[in-house]
Amino acid sequence: SWPNLDVCFAVIANMFACVFSLELLGKLYFLRGDFFYANRHLQKFNIFDGIIVMASVIDLWIISPFFSNTTSGPSLQVIRLFRFIRMMRTLRIVRTFEVFSKLRVLVMTVTLSFGALFWSMVLLSAVMLLAALFLCQALNATMLESGVDQATKSWIFRFYGTPSRAIWTVFELTFSGGWPSYARPMVEDVSAAYAVFFFIYISSVTFAMFRIITALFLKDTLGVASHDVELAIQEKMKEKHSYAAQLLEFFVAADTSGDGYLTIEEFENILKDEHVRSYLSYLELDHAQSRQLFALLDDGDKQVSVDEFVRGAVRLKGHARSQDVITIMHDCHKVLRKLGEIEKLLSNSSPEAP
Image (cartoon, rainbow, N blue to C red; front, side, top):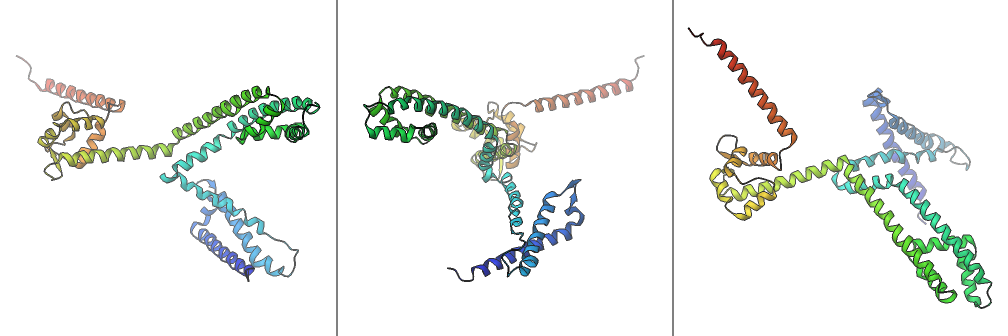
């Protein structure tokens, strides 16, 4: 219905072929030999991309003009579809942006959960097969009874008359959530004893097994998220920025003079407020010895700037780490070694007693 539609598609195809050809020529010009082999590795994707572009050019500008009037002729259009494989490499962008962190965890979880999904389906298939065969065998005898009306027999045969029908029916009532439509007619029109069967099946399979499988998938999701290095780095950076913002908020409230520096008097005055002390405890900073805390933050000029306060408070957060303790022990050993050298020099230079 759209006139000249083929012409429009041909123009678009030629435009993309030109763009891809220029891209390939540009890479070959600037990369030269590195286009094929770089960093001791064969650049397979570059070679693959070059083959696809060359196939597109040959198909559009060589083969198509010669066979434009014939219906049978060689065509390389199918090869161009493989370029989508090359475009999939752009999905690596999700590893660098924080906004895609949840998507990355979801994709990794789905990928790593195929094994659990396979065995879950094997277990469910075995249970559904046993249930379907039981219903098929039990209801076959019911279809032969004279006391059952013809409409009920037709309904039984439609859903449970053969093993294949019974398996599909059990599959539907297990996964669709509409099991009352398959169970109530049997309980009301055939026998109330089937209520026991459906009670056991629904409670053990649809309720219990499904929730156990869901919990396993949730456990895999949490495991993938906890072992994702990029996500852990992003969460750590986010936590650090949030903590720095809280420290900056405290500094602005404590700097009553507004000169951008915090003195010991300003620091002690704001610590008189119980709410402020509780806030410092929340930030994991020990405020019991205010002057000692201020001295740890100060670089010796009797006042603390914003940068000094934030950097010092970040290092003082929480309990002492093993690295900090080892650093202090190393510095103490260096001091003791220097003191020993000084003591030796003094003993050698002192005059002997007469």
